[in-house]
Length: 349
Ligand SMILES: C[S@@+](CC[C@H](N)C(=O)[O-])C[C@H]1O[C@@H](n2cnc3c(N)ncnc32)[C@H](O)[C@@H]1O
Image 1 (cartoon, rainbow, N blue to C red):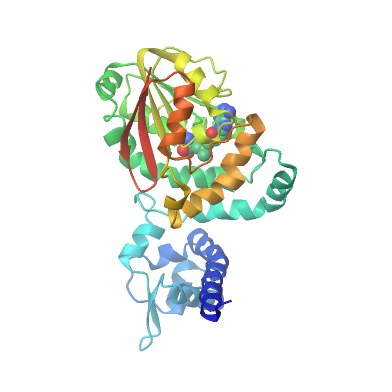
Image 2: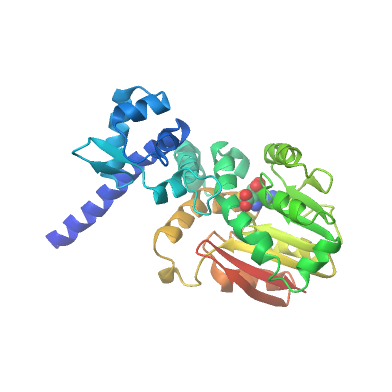
């Protein structure tokens, strides 16, 4: 054994432990408004942060020092003052920013809260349904994915599907399969008021929230929801069927793709949005792949194994994903766009 390898690896694991402990402090900063109290304010002492946030100073000081130790805040020893840089506030405070990441920690916390159930499922080899997770997961998924959808779905992903933007501006029907809290369905209903949008999911509590979100957004007139399995919904004759970060969650995903094949109008298309991944496992490294593999084990693969034998996993890559689509009889599969988080496919008969 090489001592320096042991030391380097122990340092890496210790860093991960520090991150795991500190993730809770990001949630605390987000939920108690500590980041908000500091955003745009320049240097603040712990007393000033306490006064602005209404949180007791002794707690605030400990939180500030953790955040400073992790590089989230800058510190001026002469002033005993802490600064949240504007660029960091953009990531931690600005809910409209494409890089708003604070909610991601709620996804991580749901995995910890569900750890016993996950271990039972893994030991038995059985699945664990999406509905068995702590509700934090559903909110974190919505908050995390909404940023990318808001930035890309209507502006670039739908226009990348040949002729689709013009078709939906004139009318048309869209099914958003595995819509969760409906973030993508609402964006489409707003952008295409002449089109009919149907959000489909088998998780009733998520659809209750989606319906409320649709009412709040004023789009209930052209957006409805159907609680159904991806293999048996009744919505048909669709010009566009979207799977937004959802196909890989479905067991035997070629069956969901087959059902979509039969629910498409003659010249309809699938917009398939999947987590970014390369084909070969050795190329799926770094924080995005690591995060997706963790989610895949505990959420996506676990849900898929409830419904079938074939679980695609959240890091399947284009070759395995295309294979599923070809099994469902689709012949034209095109990589339309990609971002650091997603791959977007245009799929046609
Ligand atoms: C990762 S979430 C994505 C939710 C949403 N598209 C978003 O991006 O926020 C996957 C969704 O697929 C749904 N789902 C999983 N398996 C399903 C199935 N067999 N039929 C219908 N919905 C399913 C889950 O209930 C969950 O809402």
